[in-house]
Length: 361
Image 1 (cartoon, rainbow, N blue to C red):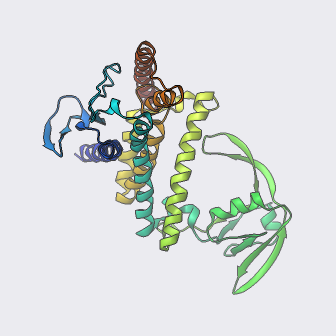
Image 2: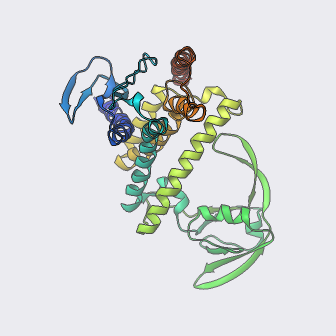
Image 3: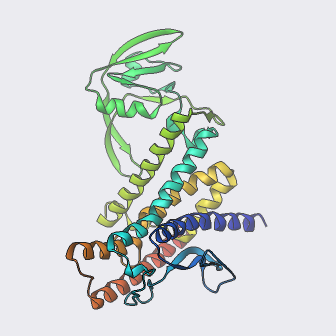
């Protein structure tokens, strides 16, 4: 019963992200006077529907996505066009681009507000470990920090020309200041200045790659169960930084997978998404919405890929029309859209294959 409960929670969480994505498309379409014929959460046979605001609002059982059906738009038949004033295809290409961008943008905006909510209510330290106070928890042996006399309990005030408020700023300051640099610390109500040279060593990045980076050899003081409290301005900064970091992380991940720098076995499918949602849901509501923010950004960024059948592919066609002043040929449009669907289905199957391998492994 417990597993069923968490599966339902995961389904509802994913549905919320899909709802906001489609709400972005819906809002932009209505703004430009496009009739939205159906707003559906889920695929398959409709279980529930209601007419409201000149749109059919539907709920279907396969909760792995959703869609907004606009008048004159038909992904199953991209050659189907409608010249009525309230039709999607009758709008200018730049208006269609905005309608298409609105879905992914809604996901990124949603992530920002989730992060903001977490910060305003006090973030568990595991969701904001980079924002703990810059107090040294441990000095590693045989490191520049130990040789310079830094101690556990020291609070770092500044590094070179960079003032330090949060722990994550230490890494940026080490990279940006020319060594040797001065470190100002607070110890037992005294301010002490020390000078040190960082060393360069191998480190593992977010993509499991070995990289070179400067280190001084300190670990933050982190207490399990600690809550990181932010001011309103600090909350906004946390939300902005986390949204940008998530967006760049996912974008860079896609780039590395597409160029072969990261193995394709890291591509996950629906099972991986549900597994992650269930694990975080078990930890509590804050952890659940934290991972929902990351998945929301993922959903937004992936939909911007220039693949026909995705928002990014449609944007590409409309930009082509804006530049050339003519729509793509119907034959090319049909072939590319069909190829896009084949690619997406293949990617989903491949992701599912990787999921099954991970479970058996």
